[in-house]
Amino acid sequence: MLELFKKKKARTAGRAENRGRGILVFDHTSEVIRAEALLKSEGWTVRVMGPPPEIRSGCDLVIEFPLMEELNILRTLEASEVVPLQVVPVSSPLLQPVELFQTKVLGGYLMVRAANMKLTVDMETRTVVNVSGGGCPDVPYLAQEMVGKTLEEAPEPRAIGHTLCGYALQLACEEMGRQCSQW
Image 1 (cartoon, rainbow, N blue to C red):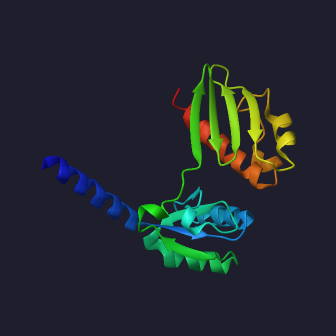
Image 2 (cartoon, helix red, strand yellow):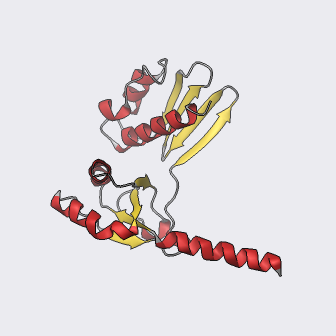
């Protein structure tokens, strides 16, 4: 009986947590990037994630946001002419956004995958040893500019890349920085 109560409580807690979140769906990746930068500059806590399969459209990214702020967020976006295709409350497990990051320790190396891009760093020296993934034309250039440099020396992908792959690599770098701060 106690086990049944725990399962019911866990399901109820998940639904309560979902009520407070929504996702903004855009047509193009560039709109997601602009919207994220705008909303963060206005002080909102938002995060870019992968879209759930049920609402996937043109773009492979969505923005998760606090649902209570929907009206203010939409006003801010409309004023900057960055209008989402749809706003979806996260009301069921099927509408959960997909986490973009996966991390894996490979010997003395840490690999962070963000969307389709992978960044691998030597855990002892914090040197970038590999950049891979994606299919965008700037990936070889990004790799050339970053491999062999420490995380602190390597340029930020957002400063030298201009594609979805560059954006995903920037997210991987930021996550790598968070992971490295824990060593």
